[in-house]
Image 1 (cartoon, helix red, strand yellow):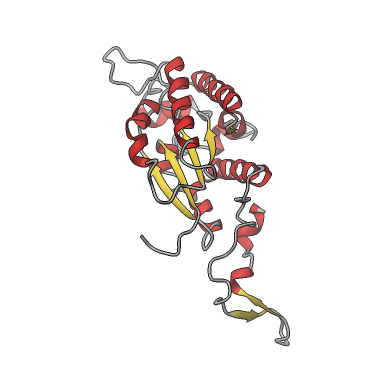
Image 2 (cartoon, rainbow, N blue to C red):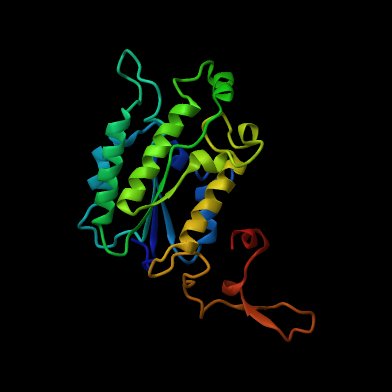
Length: 253
């Protein structure tokens, strides 16, 4: 364990989470914004569905852990929504089972501590044509199936009082979403991740959480040690480096 203990944000999900540090992904942006403020912990497993998640839930999020996460961002649904295969080997999870699996995940996370906050990400939109071009076929995936699983996740979160981001709708707000948001029709490009991170930061900023977990609100670690730099030619105005907003961060206020 490396100290001092910071707030922990856990990203838990399938490939949308595992690859969130690739292609200037949303996980990497979170880690950048929360540097010196919170630890971003990646628990992403490509190919997984909600059924897989339940098998490791107690191990990834033990209830007796000394430190519990301040925020857990959960994504499952894209793989659950694929068509069933006659062999039974696909990642498909029937919609009613998916909803119950996500309910169990939410209830477990809520039980970790009173300070643990939760955001669910729904099944995103996808480009079926692009998938077929890259993989040779649609892999049993359809945008319409993703919509059904996304809607079900939103409805569940409203029932449970869990914050939720409808990625199926969010990605399609761009006019050119079909060509801009994906690397292969499924996984997110830089532009796709920008949409995700904007939605996440919006939820965090507007949430009535105590403490506020927005990156601008959390204290910086060891601010008193941070050296100063002079920001005018005369050398009369100084600012601590730890208090500076760098150019690439200003868009995420």
